[in-house]
Image (cartoon, rainbow, N blue to C red; front, side, top):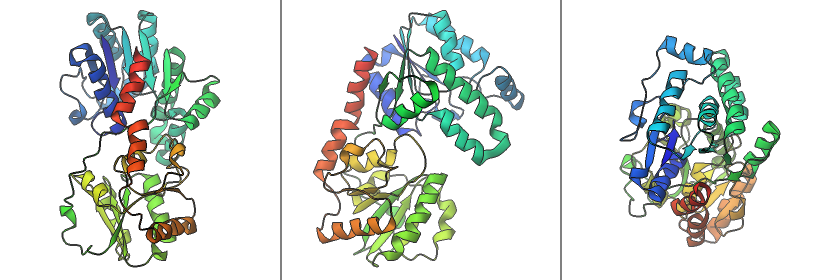
Length: 371
């Protein structure tokens, strides 16, 4: 019997893939799901879940040395579930739950605990502390402490890519036990209805797609792309910006006739299927970018930076994939695509996704790790 513990479910593609893959490997009846999500709508059906903290309860969790997602009482309840269901392996889709991992390993030494690192949080949380300020200080310290315990007590620590491996070594003076690359669900090639754009005249336009939620690396990257690339392209190109919360910055781009801030959409597949080029002008952040794997899944012609190609370096050189870090380089890449009429779908890009970043690839990796 296996236990899956996470705070990320429906809104995190990578965690969703891990969860679904483990269910297929072990079967629905052989996996116990523990949700530490703070949002009620994140809890999958049948998961064990816990009440959201009160204002006083949050402070109590910090004083106990836990992050806001855990309390000593929740840790005790999870340990009881481990005993009740005779769990022999645990997959934790989060690296800051070290107080829980420490307790599990002290009580049940023979249980294998595998932890997946979406980022190296000790580094990422330091950046968030700069952005969010003093109000984030308790979550910063408890999360960094949690990750330090996590890497110590987990049997297998899995990072996303070689960069996170290097950062892990720098932070903790030891090698992680393995890598588990980004994976996204299979594409839906049948969806092509972009009804949100019915009021825009896009006929005869070449559609450049930017996908990203309202998050400072995406906001900064979009601004850079608008100022360094879009202003140097002919009028036949139109940039569509899709992502949760991006409608907040719509007014900032009202003067750009060739930029449409769509914001959140119900059917992202339709935008990938209609895209002539997908771009990811990202210069900040960590881990691996989901939008890169998604673009590959749809076989789209793709232009990324060193940052958005991090972990995907083996794809550089496949026809239709470009790594560019300056405005001039991106403009030249678009000109090359135009000269070769290489817009849209590329089967070699799709096949690369299938081999390395698909659901089946993740399932094969997890089967080896969890055996």
